[in-house]
Amino acid sequence: MHRSPSLADIEAFDERQFYLEEFRGKTLLLALHADEIEDAADQIALAGVVRTLAGNDTRVVVVIGASDASAAAAERLERTLLPALLGTGNASVGARAGSGRSSFARFDPTSFDTGNAAAVVARIWSALRREQLFVGIAEGADPVATTRFARQIATRFRVHKLVLVDREGGFCGTDGKTLSFLDEAALSALLELGEAEWTGLGSRLRLVDAVRDALLSGVASVNVCTLLGTARELFTYEGSGTLFTLKDYCSIDSLGIDDFEEAERLIERGQREGLLKPRSADEVARLLATGYGATIATHHLAGFAAFVTEPYRAEQAGEIVGLYTITRFKGEGVGDRLVDRILDDAHAAGLRYVFATTTSTRAQTFFERCGFVRVDPEDVPQSKWLGYDEARKLRVAVLRMELAGARP
Image (tube, rainbow, N blue to C red; front, side):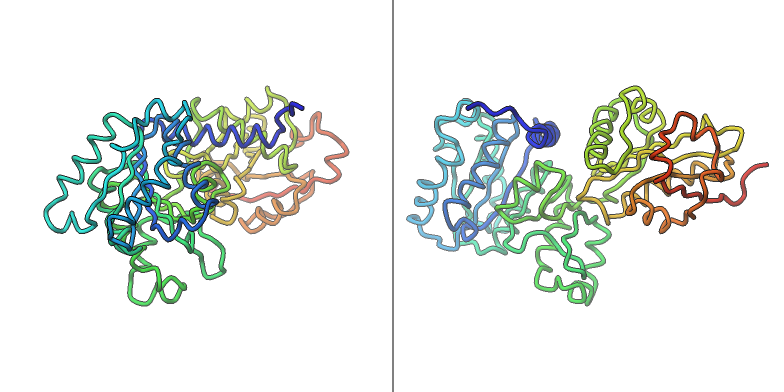
């Protein structure tokens, strides 16, 4: 029986398409050691990611390290893995992937150190000129050598993204929670004497070093995740590992029209989760006109907030409305940055105070942590309550922050 797509199905499809749009026409390099491909589930996970990307008009380079340097081991990998990666019989990939044989090559992982880098680069590009996928086997490479060789290829090509598959997955903080993002400055701090050991990352120093070298050499971003978590890391807001970028991962700016569609999806998501008040399409459009976005790594809108001032000019006040951040980024400081930017602009505009209202206990705690104080509804502009739902007004928490140095 045919099943209509659920809201979750549609949302997952939208997320995937959003990320695939970013990758279209770009080159991604995915590196892993053969030890990570232990069973059919691992092979299916890898093939699913590779075929999704290749079918998206994304060039994909897969580097697989094989500790066994024998020809038989490489042939076994080629025989068992390549058909799955190429998606034999899959029209969306097969039309662009070529016959298969020319997409596969074996390399000495020390090629860049022994003056043979040009041959590696030429071999890969000769395949990618005709096909979306290239698979290279680093013969006799342990996991460390595999990562190093992949990083050398990635930096030589300056690929859009380097994905390092690691059994431990993304990096964790001292609280054991996976860190969604780290920039180069944070990586440099980890490399200082004793820092990595103190945060529990001492065993991963070589990986930290490889990630930092890739970023400094021109790779736009690096992801570290497990093999089974790769699809979630690349194609969903939720993610599974850690994304590394050269500069500060999060920037706050007022929205442009090209951001409106994505911001609207964030607002709708917050409404479905019950964190944001339901609003009509026209009401949402007015929020977008005064909206700020938190952008992650130049592409991903991770948070939104609007700052409404026009109805409150007489009181020299402003209201933060529709503050929402995607689940993955909660606790990453995205909401704080949005509020900080709004407060800076409120100071510059000479406002006397800023306020917010919410029925969410979590949101109330957040605003109080930012310095807001709970007040009575009468302590904010009364125009706020014109046409406001009375039942909601009884439940809503009103929070206000005084701004020092406001213009008279």
